[in-house]
Structures are given as C-alpha cells and as structure tokens.
Image (cartoon, rainbow, N blue to C red; front, side):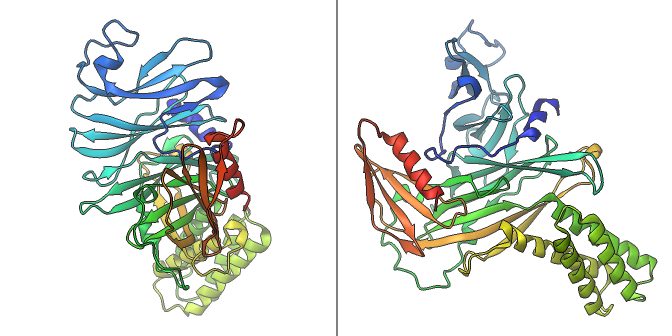
Length: 469
C-alpha cells in the first residue's frame, strides 16, 4: 500500500502530447533531469559478478529487466525490476513513462512465461519503492507490440457529505496483437487505482469492435495497406483530465479509427448505485407495487440529495426522469428490475452529458458505449468506502479510409477530441504528413529539416498543429 500511495496523488495528465509515438520508449527523463533507461538481457550481462546489486542466488543466464537511473553528473545506478528474475521467463519490449507531479516512473513490458506465453506486465517506481508488478490479462498465445501509456485522474468524496476523499488514477494501456491467423488487432485496458490501491480487475477491450461500418459515403479503401501504418498506434491525453484519445488502423476494414475514452466521474456511479439501492429499500418498505407515487417521489428526493456533486438543474432533471420512469412502469416490473432500469437510465444520462454535454452531429462520433468495472472488495480496503463502479465510456470520434503513406516511420498525431487525425512519416531529410479533412484526407505536405528543425522539432510542430484543431 505505502509503496504505491503516491500514485493516487497524481495532479496532472502526463505532458507527452508533443512527443513522437510512445511505443517502445526505453528511455525517459524524470524530475531534476534524471535519465531512466530500460535494459533487457541476461542477469550475468546486466549484473556481472561483484557489481552493485549482484545476487549470487540468481542464475546468470536468467532473462531480466533492469532500470538504469542516471542523475545529472552522477554515475549510473542500475537496479533489478522486481519480479523479472523468474528463471524460465523472458523479459522484453519495455516502455517507460514518467509522471512529473507524482514523481513516478511507470514501466510496461512483455514477459514470456516459460519463454512461450506472452503477457504484459506493469510496474511502478517512486525512486525508493516499487509497485508489485501487475499482470495484464490477454491472449497468452499472441505476439504483442510494446504498449503505449496515458494517465487520467480524478477525486471525489467517499460518500455524499463525507470529508474523506477517494483518489482515482487510471493508467490507459494500448497495444497491438497478431492473432492466430495473422490478423493484426488493437487492444486496450484501463489499470485503475482507488486511493493508491489497484482494484484487482483490468478487463481487456478489443478496439476493433468499435470500428462500425461507416454510415456515410466513403472513399474507396486503400488497395494495399502499408505495414507501418497497420502497426502504428497512438494514445495521448484528451480534452480534459478524465479523457484520452486513441488511434489505430483496422486491417479488416482498411480504415483509420480514432476513439475518445472517457473515465466518467465517480459521482455518476455513486448516484446510480445509490438510487438503485434506495428504490429497492423504499419499495420493500412501502409494499411495492402499492403506493407507487410515494416510491417515485422518494426516489426523486433521494437522487437530488445525493446528487449534490452535479449542478442542481442537472440533478433535478435526472431525478425528475427517474420519478417519471417509475410512474410510467405502472408497477408491472419486478422491484429489482425497476431499480436496475433506473440505474441504467442515470448512467445513460451521465454518459450523454460527458464532454460538456456536446456531441458532434456526425452519426459516427455520436456513437457511445459504456463499460462498467467494479472493484474487487477483497482488494480495496473497507476504509476506501463501498466498492466503486467505474464507468469507462468509448466514443467513436472518427472513421476514415486508410490512406497510402510514403516510406519511413509512421506516427499518428490527434486533436484533443480525437476527431482530427494527422499521419506523418519520417524520412532522412524531411517529415511528410497528411492531415485529415472532414471524413477524408487533405493533400500530402512536408517539413524539411534545417539547422533549426530536426525530427524532434518537426514532431513537436505537428503535434501542436493537430492539437490545435
């Protein structure tokens, strides 16, 4: 618990929006100019006999993951990443991400169990202590790419009217896999911490499932998808501290897809769960389906009472709709079914109000799907309050035919809403790029390298352009 308590105090989304793609990022800068480097290899290579940190109990041939910590002007300090000296496992493809405000380094890597079955692992280091590595569930038979990471955070009262604050931090992981028949697919999982404690569940979502057929006329699909484009992924901070945006190419439909992923506010799930419990309780006490008007009025009053985190007009509207829904049922539903329907309606209202309550008129970008993740009560301590239902909303932000790109390393850059996408490919003396335009693409443009503009600067310019749209 103490080793990862600082995770829950994250105060800002990671500022990597201006960098190049984060996949396979094996080096990153921390606070005070400290450089972190991820190293993979055998234990004997990384920790020779007699070197600092050497442990004679570890077989020199064991595959391990190490972290080089290099403060400015000081020698390298190498440490073994906990859980990576497991004999037969193979550690590879590390990615690093440093979060400045909490002074936390996150590591994600692939561990091949018994050198055969690939799984993704997540670790964290605060400069003194390590988070116990978390295994990310997925297909243990598929080849995986190095994952990318983004962070969101929020906080709220443990219970309405309570002074106790529950901090929530979500690490959003995005990666690609090749399935058993050679098709490339994109996957995502949210790693959720409540008050610094991992909630014990991290479901994996196949983002290709959100690539619904376009409802509007589209340009012909690209005849042959460039392999670099297919394997390019992007996840970055979104429009606020609760959203991230992601982009990938679907080989099956030959389209470039972007999604906005929104961690809906905790008060929404608290109101929904609280309303459900209250309807069941008051319904039993008032002999439901008798006295239906009293039950409906009591439910309305309860929602207004526990909905103080929302603007009063929004809470009142939500309460009115639930009262009307109960009355419209005519008492023909079972009590639990009635309460479940009320809960679902509250979540639906809250989901539609996310993103400031505004939606694009584009039919695709209005597509919403909400996933529910409930903390494991055996993992989150009772002091953190009742197990919280975490609501993750997926919005299809854009869906365009995949374009043809030129030679070079391909990268995505996204607007804060995810609705605009810029594709760039780096060459020896220039970066060429293709911005989106409506439901299609604009013309190819380029930034030539000069004495003052190198690849990193060009990427920063493109990220700024994409983010300003």
